[in-house]
Amino acid sequence: MQLQLQDDSALSDDTRWTIHTDVFDGPLDLLLYLVRKEGIDLLKLPLARIADSYLAYLDRLRAMNLGIAADYLVMAAELVHLKSLELLPRPPTPVEEDDVDPREELARRLRAHARLAELAQQLDERPQVDREVHVRQPVELGDDRRGVRTAVDAFGLLDTYYRLLQRKEAPPPEVRLSSAGPDLGACVTRLLAALGGPGGRGELGQMLRSLPTRADRVVTFLASLEMARLRWIDLAQEQHLGPVTVTRHVADDEVDLSAIVGFDPPDGPEAEGDQITLPLGAS
Amino acid sequence: MSEGVLDFPSRPGGVDEELVFAMEALLFASGKPVSADKLSSLLGVGRSEIVQAARVLAQRRAGSGVVVERIAGGWQLRTSPRFSALVRELRGTSPRRLSKAALEVLAAVAYEQPCTRGDVEALRGVDSGGVMKSLLEQGLLRVAGRAPVPGRPLVYRTTVDFLELFSLPDIAALPTLEERKALAATESGEGDPVPALRDDAAQRAAASEE
Image (cartoon, rainbow over all chains, first blue to last red; front, top):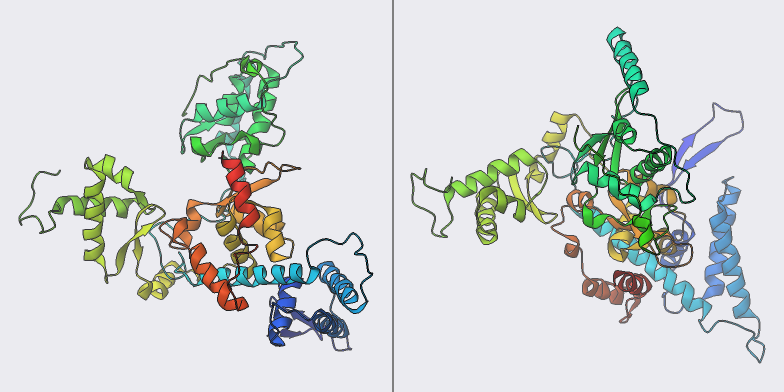
């Protein structure tokens, strides 16, 4: 185990250390480390011993003035409970205890965790893009070059002014009184269809304005936010109040409407009620 | 294009030289892996010829500075690992490192998929919401619907970018269940019938796939 020690003496006169460690990633990880350190066979887990060394370890951390995350305390409580089960004589009639041996359950979790760590390491050993190998366009991972940039000049203002005028001229939304609002699923599929296949683009405002009712516009707008969250589409706005470009990522066979929050699968054909086609695809 | 700008006879394998060159040009221009179907429709030849041409191209480039690799169901041109330090210097970047937590989450999803955040956290024994959100944003994980269990939690899968990042031809190229069983056996001292990493998630997958 390697702890990085960092002297924080500038803060006060008593010696204060900040310890950064990413050695243990949660209680299971610590437990696994202890089990391995003591050379214990995962199949015959001596709980009393494990619980003791785990608690001793937490004590040591506490003595070093470390905050201990709640997860670790939960595991400590669990271990003490298991240890007590082992030490106390069992009542003759088993009290509504699960069939599973709690020790076996813990050992199973530890083994799964050990295997996962192994697999993660194997994964890390593979040649990775931007580490061992490079491709012509680096894969765009966590692209944060996008975002709002306000670069408004006189022409930008003029453009915005004209756009506002145009927006005023757009036909006012039709008000329709009906009990059922627009169907979320239909709004999603309609928007995707208007964008065409993966890679298709459109302008969000223009698409929304082409819808007849206000409710349709609102629901489609909300659906677009949800789809952006699921990374089915990408929403990009170059500048404040500028056009919003919608780019479709999702392929048809990847569209699963049940991933949309608030989506209720339609029970009958009535959901097919309103058929509106967006007049535009790419812009 | 297939008709002969050939100054030399076709190779013994019977692969059209020009086809190999055209494929090289396409792979260079794309940057991303290009699938056999895409190449086949662009070049107007059958899949088997594409596969053969790709093999010739890969052989020819092997050992050079830019090699052809089978990635994410297609082929991609990549710099040889020998020159990674140089390329990084040119680009002014440092090697990308994924955190241990991110690697564990990716491994868990890669083997369990489709799986929920709960499945991942059960394996890791620690809250993984933040890591998964970040991986989702990086495009290495994607949401693939909801699990048909109470609460309808989101289920996750790895993406094509994941395959590309880890230089995988497809998801099956990860060590298989059998290899992992062997691993488990050496670990616990006996043939363990593949615990945790699989069972319930696989059943659920089977249930949701119908």
